Length: 249
Image (cartoon, rainbow, N blue to C red; front, side, top):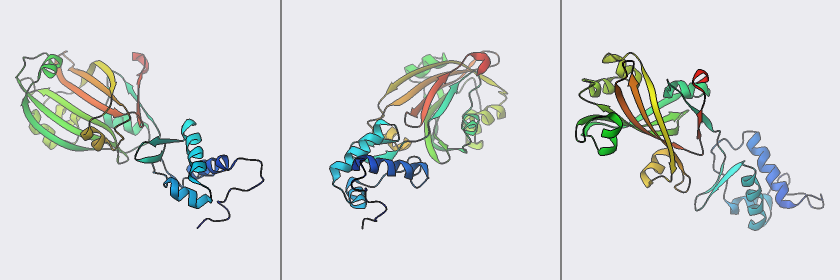
């Protein structure tokens, strides 16, 4: 049932769709609709405000153009999420990045196994194709929301005991420390963009029509040996990549 407070005021001189947009904007600002929350359907909003769906659609389009919501074909409308700046530097660490945004980091391991290196992985690690690599695949979370889907590849011959260490520790930094690698640095980062596969979209809880940012990273130890080749995928509704001068990173 439409409440009198929600019904657009006739004769106010303000178009009904704009009054609806302003009301929904206030709902978002006031926390009634949180970051990433799905809005009610057009039919339910039309019933709430006592208008037709075309009027509601105009209001939603206005909010979308303003960046307050995003409209996903076939899925509905969602409150725009806060975007986290992922600053690429020499010592980029997932947990530190998330905590800088006052979020709680966590992760979910999808797979941990040893595999022969594929050509792209072998090239990134500087080893021969087919050599054994330890592969860790996981989803990174900030306050429980997926912000990264990553595949980490470690050369088994250079890092004996790495698979066991990854199984015992909660972070890559701690696992490397366990086998004697006290510190490591980012040697290079290459960024591209593409649409997610069905499995990537599911893991990251995002629409397939929105792009991913894909980072291919090479990390080295203090002696300059390559110890990791990583491929990280970030959902553009939640993450943007930022490059800063080395002294500011």
